[in-house]
Amino acid sequence: MVSYKRIYLGSSCNNSCLYCIEKSKDAYPDMPDVQDNLVQSDTLDSVELYGGEPTTRKDIFSIVDEARNSGYKRIKIVTNARTCSDINTAVRLIEYGCHHYEIKLHHSRPDLHDYVTQVKGSLQETVQGLANLRRINSFHQEAFSAFISLRISLSRQNYQDIDSILLAFIPYRIDRYILSLDDSDLELSKALPHIQNAINLAILNRTWITTQKIPFCTMRGFEHHVSEVYHSHDNTYRKPGICNGCPMDELCPGLHDSYSGIDGVDALKPLQGNDQMIEDIRNLANE
Image (cartoon, rainbow, N blue to C red; front, side, top):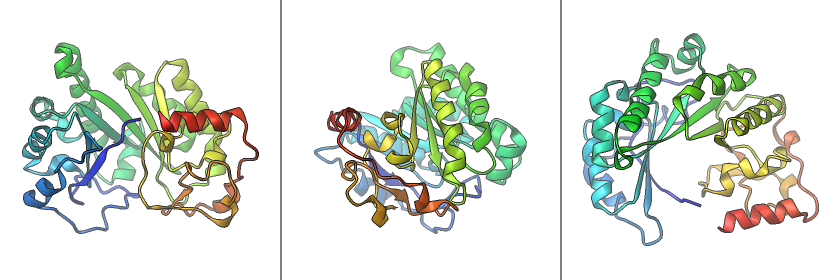
C-alpha cells in the first residue's frame, strides 16, 4: 500500500466544475509555505500535489523540483491535464521528476464533459494532455515514463455511461481507473449496477480499477476495489449510527461529507459476521 503526503497547492483552476468542493475556497499557498509542507516525513516517501489545478501555478516546475530534491520517490499530481496539451509542459513536468498523474475526467463526450467543467473545449485539451503524457511514455526509456490514472468523477450526467467512457480510453493504455463519487446528489443505489459493470469491464481489459467515497457495504463482491483499503483517507468522512458494530468499521471511512444523495444512509447495510472476504480485506490493508 502506497501512502502519500498530500500537499494542497491552492484553489486556482482553469475549470469551474459543478461538483468541485475546492472552488469555493480562496487559498493560494506561497512557495515558502509549500517548501515547509514538503519537509519529508520519516514514514512517507511519496507526495501528492493537488488543488484546484496545480499545473496552473507559474512555479509548478520549481515545486516538483523541490519535491524531488526533498527525497520523495514518487511525485503525483492530481490534474485535469489541460496544461499538458502543450507538449513542452508535459515533457518538463516529467523531466523535473513527476511520473504519476491522476487525471480528472467527467465524460468521453465533449458536450457532457464541458457542461460539468463549464469550459468549452476542456475535454479536447484534457485528452490531448493525456495523449502527450502517454506519447512521452512510448517514445522514451522507463526513466522518462509516466504512470497514468484516470479518475472518472461520477455524477448524474455520466453514471449510466461509465462503461462507454472506459471503452473510449482503452487505446490510451490507462494504468488505473478510479471511479469517484463526487456528485453529492447522485443516488448511489442507481449508480451501483453501472459501477459494478465498469469494474468487470476493466478486469476484462486487464486494467486495475478502484472506487473512491463508496462505502464497503455497498460493494459486496467488489470490496477489494475500494481504494480506502489501500490508501489513507482524510477526516472528510462520517459514519452514521447504522455503522456501529460493522466488522469493517476500522477500515471503512463511511460516507463522504459531501454526499447527500436521496437514498443516503438507506444505501448502507452493515456487513454481518467475520467471513473469509473480511479477513482477506484486512490482510490487504496491512500489506
